Length: 492
Image (cartoon, rainbow, N blue to C red; front, side, top):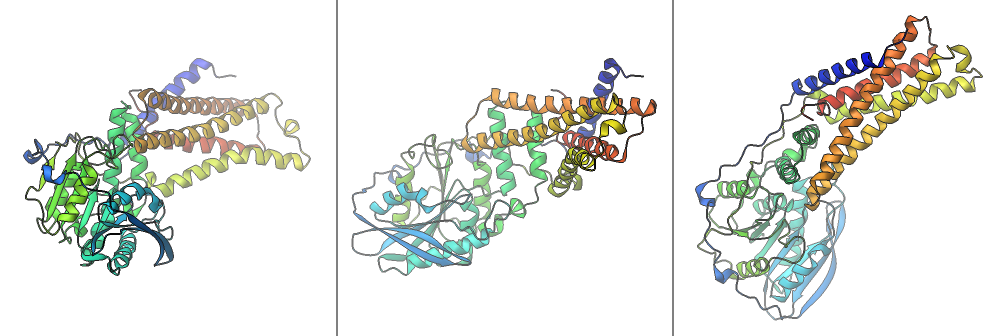
């Protein structure tokens, strides 16, 4: 007795439909950020005053000093750049964005500012207590305050004009430091999200997927994966720290930065600050790092920064100005995944599948080492064919896992580098989904062959049962997981 290909095709089609429905019904619902309705204040901003953009002399010679600053748990290397002109100068500490980077990334702007008369300090980011999974923003703020103490102790620094500059993730760090210490005289927030890290990442991914014309299923895959990540810092609320800032604050945003919801970030900043000591400027053509497509800085960035610091404690009367920002979608929270969509359960599922795939070759090897040849214990026609099916299934399952991980990394790299092209996304998504359907068809075919063999009287050995259970069970777990992440969803 055999099961025809037509029957198997129908069974596989029914299973695809069932898994598609299962993925649709399982919470959380699809992530679909609504369009942003801007407040009237953002419809047309006044032009930035010319006095803020006036040319700045950068002819002052500077000295460069390299020091080591002890902080909690380690010592951080720092570089201080000092103008050689006499007297006390304004000073500023650079606070990095995400990742473990070197203070040397600020070299060009630190030298420019020092030559304009502002002492600058840049330092390497800590490695103890900061990782991909765990980010303690309060600990990073503590490091920044140590650097403030270093500058304030210098005879060539004006303590009343010594502040913090933070970019991106630094926008969550600097407010904590400023709210906790009056030694911070001012704050500069560059591309500061002011929403939770989860909202910021989801916004950036959504913008990138829109630009790449990615299918809706790609967004569901990524956001369900994000919703299952159990990193506490992703839900960080910046409002309490922002509410504690009483120092003058300069916030700078680039209109070509697709990774920051700058309208919502600005609204959060204005609503949270307890005073009106803020200056908000939108710079035309600037990206996340205030550069033009990752190249040179936009012309108005450094002059605006230097002129604002030098004019302290006086502040511009015009609170918000510059190029009109355009934010199309809201920065929305990614729904938290249910228990079966969490990273712990997903890890357990993948582990069980991997164990199942390993069981096949291991059990066969053990039998051969015992001097028993499976070919003499079983039906000579059934088991070799079934074993080949199981091997192909295991390789396809591993290929599916590798393809999904590679596809997610591709989208993340596209988002970080603001690059990529839609054919690559479409092709990657097609490969992932085709592999999911192939492994489902393989599972249906293997189960069909097993049923036929059992009906014909085949009695599998103990080792063969272990192999069948491992591979078929592991593949079943992968298929359900793939359904949850939308790999069988319609339309294609």
